[in-house]
Structures are given as C-alpha cells and as structure tokens.
Image (tube, rainbow, N blue to C red):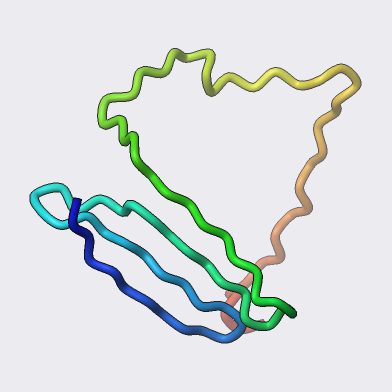
Length: 85
C-alpha cells in the first residue's frame, strides 16, 4: 500500500508518520525519536489490523477495585478564575 510520509521536529523529539493513501487515510506507522537523549532512542509502531466494528460487552469497562483498595477523595478546587492565577 502507498503511504504519505510526514516528518516533524520539536524540542527534544522528532516524529514521523506514514498515512495510507486512498479512500481510507489510516495512520500505518509512527516513529518517535528522542533527540535529547544519548543515542537518540526510537519508539516505532506499525498498525496493520484496523477493526472498525469492535464488540465490547459492558464488563469490558466495569471497574472492580482490588482487595484493600480504598477511595481517595480529590481536593476541592479553589474558587475564582484559574486563568488569573
């Protein structure tokens, strides 16, 4: 399959993406390079098996806390405009 290849540079990271050409322009590959780490390590992912009609039961997203787990309450938000802080 033919893909368009795009490459980008940012502070500390370069990344590339390959997007399939045609009627369904799906991302097919990503490469992320850490340029601020010695050796410039890369993370690469290739996507080949897209499922456009996944089936999930309710239990897939049900949360069951582990033994001994307890709820932690969030702190209350301060009043006022968060943009002015």
